[in-house]
Every structure is written in C-alpha cells, then in structure tokens.
Image 1: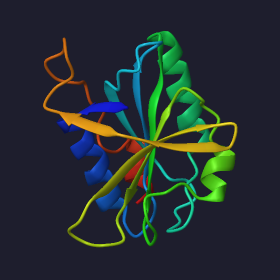
Image 2 (image 1 turned 135 degrees about the vertical axis):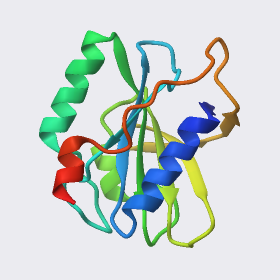
Image 3 (image 1 turned 60 degrees about the vertical axis):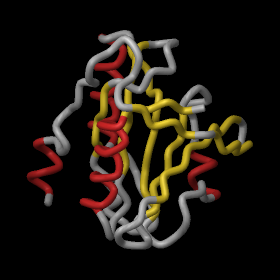
Amino acid sequence: MLEIDQATYDAIVAHARRDHPDEACGVVAGPAGSDRPERFVAMLNAARSPTFYEFDSHDLLALYRQMDDRDEEPVVIYHSHTATEAYPSRTDISLAMEPGAHYVLVSTREPGTVEFRSYRIVDGEVTEEEVSVVPVLKDRESPPHEPATTDREASQR
C-alpha cells in the first residue's frame, strides 16, 4: 500500500494538470529504506510529448546525487497519461528500473476528474496497490516540497 500525504497527492495532480496535454513526470524522495514519500520533486518531461515521458538526463543525475547526499531514495516515481487510463503501458513497464518504488499514474484524459493509481513493477510484473491519502504522514507535520518547476523547466517553456 502507498501511504501519501494530501499535500504531495495534490502537488502530483496539479503538476499533471499543469503539463497537460503533455505528460508530466517526477519523483517523491524519502529516507532510504523508509517507504515514506516525503520530498516532492517535479521534473521536466524532456520528451515534451502527450504520449511519452522522459526525465531530463542532467536533472535526473542531479536528483540522484542529491538523494545520495541526503541518504534518500525514490519512493514514488510518477507520471501522467493524457489520453488513456492510469495504467502502465508496455513502455512504462520496460522502463521501470526501481523495484522498491511505487509507480504512480495520474490520468488527465477527463477534465475535472482525477484517476490516481499506484503500482509496483518488478521484473515486468505489474501489481496495483491501494493508495491511502492521509492529512500528514505520521511523525511529520508537513512534507518539504521542491518548487513546482525548476529554473531550467521554466526557461524552456
């Protein structure tokens, strides 16, 4: 089960809606081994596509270095689908390289509705899991959030 706080849930959904009609993507990092999604990081979809997402390689490398420095790991890897349901595509499954992560998909195909689903993807096997949205994560008042867009992302729009 994915337990996620309301602010992070809202940030993921807002990012998906903001980037529509292109797919949005990002990461929610947390302390290594904790399975706690605490630090929301909106990423740039370098593909700028309504049917595919690709993390910018420089931004992704910087994020992994930052997570290493903070003893964090990607707890949630999210992206949106703009015209289909929130279910991993064959491409999504083939690109899933973090067996411990929750893969969250948000569908923005129907304005005004939210389809927010989470999966575990291990060795090509997709398992949907329950999502529990809580006001705040236990033992934490509010999660730290990165800016909704990076300077690089803003300058490329």
